[in-house]
Image 1 (cartoon, rainbow, N blue to C red):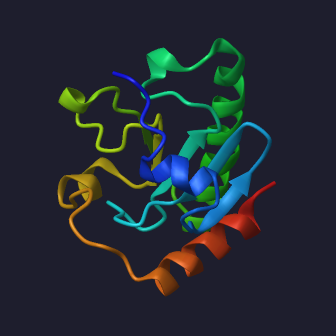
Image 2: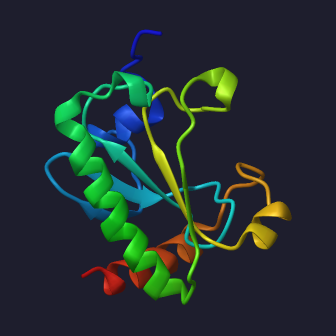
Length: 140
C-alpha cells in the first residue's frame, strides 16, 4: 500500500490539523487519541512516511521505542497504574484505521479494556487536555 500524504496524521505532522501534544522530538510525536479507548489513551507516531511497522526505516525504530518508553512511564505515573497496554496494528485487515504507522499506549487493565471500545465516540477536548497536562507533568 502506498503512503497517502493526506492522512490525518500526516496533516498533524505538517501542522495542518491540531492535536493535543504530550511529547515531541526530532523523529517522533506523541499526542492524545481523540477517540480514546481509556482515559489517557496516547498515540506515538514516527515523523516519517510509513504505513505499517514493516515500512518504518530501521533508523527510526529506536526513536519510536524510546518515545514509547518515556510516554509509557509518564502514563503510569499520571494515572497511578501498573499496567500499560501498548499495541500497533499493521494493515487495514489487522484493524489499522489511519494509514500512518502509530502505536497505542493505554494506561489500563485487561478487565477495563474488555468493557471499553476504541473509536466509539469523540472525547471532550477539555478533558483530553487535562489528561495531556497530567502526562506532561509526569514526563521525566
